[in-house]
Length: 107
Image 1: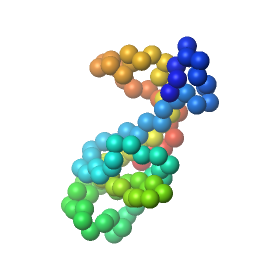
Image 2: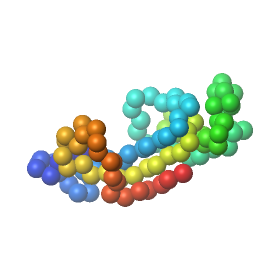
Image 3: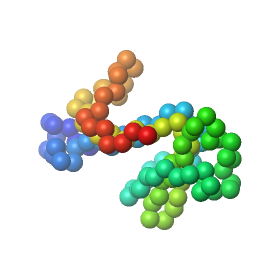
Image 4: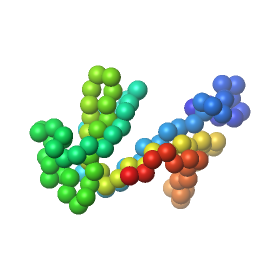
């Protein structure tokens, strides 16, 4: 992401897509993902090698698909939002209430 004072800045491309999860009981994803699709799936589609007891307390199962693999997250919910940070130090502000420019999905 480029900042407004940088030559590469463009309002059409200079933003983050944030994925916020809460009440996470399982996360099995790599550190970097590209070209992903996220969908909520029912318990019966969870792979057998993942403990179904992790889905207690109304947690949801999120399947993240890439062109070559599938990954899983079990969490209480997911928020996907657009965020345009314009000050780098904002990430280090422990008292910041994270605000989004646009919420795309909340489940």
